[in-house]
Length: 263
Length: 283
Image (tube, rainbow over all chains, first blue to last red; front, top):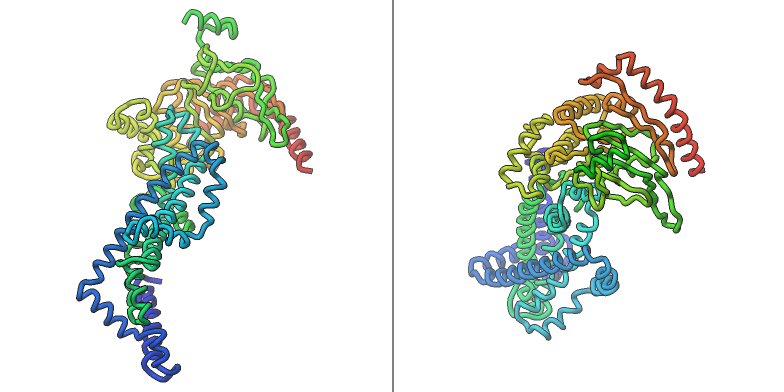
């Protein structure tokens, strides 16, 4: 199938859904339009609300806050994950001792930490960053740990026979292997950074997309909720696209098929 | 040097220092159930400098294990490995090792993979890249310098591996069924390539293979190992064929067939024994 057909089919799906939604919420074809539009809003009103947000410019502030929180969560969580992952992988005793605690901490649904972080760090951005960090950290940590552990023994022996010392092994073998695992989980970890930010905002804040959605919901402004959801969706798609660009640059050495099967 | 010469003279009655000496080497692995599996029993082997030795034996006879011990990747349970008259401790600094499995760093391009061996020993990157380009040319891959390993064919990856090892000018070249996964034609081509590179500056070579044709075609001497466990050297044949050789043509020489028949008669018994043992283990 060529690209053009594919894109037109993809657009068609959106058009069909929107048209169905529009008909259902404005005509009596499916049911009472008043009831339906109360629960599902109207697509045109949602669109108008989004245009209004962007025209007024108020949305940029909230987007900026959410982006800052997600970016900080990603950077701090990744750094921590890389450092601790490396450290644990190179020190098996340490890894063995902390293994049950790491597992326990990872098993905890992170949402329950949000009130604690709000209590500790206030309602500003840092409580959301902290929530995002707890999500990102474990993904990066496990991937880096695995990446160091799963270096092919043949590649490792070969590197040693080529005369590499410990430091050079770290730089030329362990690090690239670990980072390749980390990069292949980039979509997941970036996604979780956004989740942390938005859930944190939703549970208590004064700014951000999560706050916007929560505010609309608390006054039964379904149009506002849907508009917020779509803005969030667009934002995540944009971030994901950027991640794909970065990933394609960083993982050029990988065979294409394995990248696809990794997702 | 005089001490070294005296030592080797005692051992081998030759004047040059031997590249590799295995003296009474035993290699054993501990099994998960607590037992001990002796892969290689009592082995004595001398490889002179500039000598090409092929090691042939049935599958699972510990040929690779012997190379690993020579490389210093594995410590023998008993006995001693000596290299250029010095007992080996740690990795063998004189040895370059071409592994059976893919062992290029997949995140480095062909040229970076070749250059890294010089870079880690302190050569500047520019100089290392220059040398690497020359070596890629020698293995016929000038046009593929910027490819990553997954973009190369199996044969091309082996060529890069060969350049990666040889750029460091090791005095001993260890090769573990390097052409095993390649098809028959590519094996012949790789054999010729290896011979031409080797004849330029003869190194000591230990070449492990299960292909007797390949062993006879390449080597000065063919060592036959018995089936494991506790496999030992059971045959030692000097190959009288003249050099330079050509892997495809050499098979039509009558002398090749004579040598081949003689060695095969010795090996056949062991191959069958090896099969019987695997079957016994399986049943």
